Length: 448
Image (cartoon, rainbow, N blue to C red; front, side, top):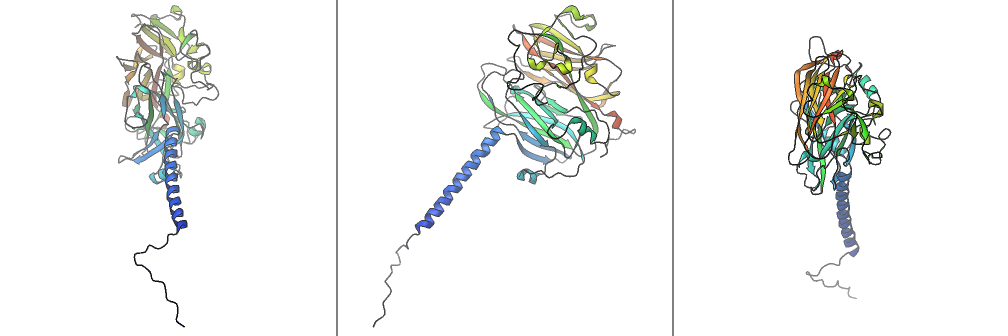
């Protein structure tokens, strides 16, 4: 009996296809593509709605920075001061290694001293990420994070009494970068966490709608540095509310005295009354140079620009730090001795200020002699509303300030329009923690 022979095969014949395997491969590829697309869309959504840490670098001079990016701010309407889109970036680390940045995990190093030396913010188009005009910037406040520690506990970490407020650096229109003189900084710990609250504005009607983001860098150094502390001094005025402002909320949906983040305002919203013995006054017209001739009865009150400018715990129920300026030249004066709250004679090494459009200058005056200690000036736009530049004063030697003296702050405005405009006047001073500087004037080292 003959054995069966194998069927003849054609060398060109295609072997049968395993359809199950094909569907598995196709399904895997499709799933991978869908997952990648979802991840990309989700990442873009997070970048638009959540603050991001985008970079960390150590520079050759020992300085390092953490780079931050805000969520998308949609400017679809007119937003005046303190009205625009805003967000807070909580718990910003002052130290972050590049590999930890990729992992999005922070491993704390030893609790060494570091010094905050600067902060800068630029505005970018939310889509192209190209740098755009800074005119849409309201303010940015870098603070000790209230979610990690309170300011008293933070100060106690250094083994000695410090005088730094919770607010570290404030950026404003015309002054969107602050860098202290070489060899000076605000003491922090390597484990410190900061909050950065930013707000946009859009003061000029008729501009196209746009979406923006804010890119910022927080600069620190590990090198021993002379320690500074900050004071923010505000002009405050007796006020009456303009019709229609009785129920105005500065930031809709937020309660100023309960839930508002401490960085939301340009001025400190502390709970200690700091009004000076000399009543706040203002005077209009050209002949306002001799402040000693001003009398509190010369004018009654200014119009308050918002409820948010009224901080009863600090300035009393009758005062506002956000007021309306009618057409013409006006000067507004307040004693700020209590706000300055000097614990000792010291020197100031960095000074700048905040004025609204059509503000011209801020002067800190020693009251007994009427000597102008600091004069910060503003450069404003001429084609539309906006502050282009706020001047600054930097000094390595320092300008003396005496604890036993009385000081007043004078804000000057020249409203060239035919309508009232809103105004503020704040001076930011950075002074030496003199108690912690060694006698031989070497760089201070606050011990752990």
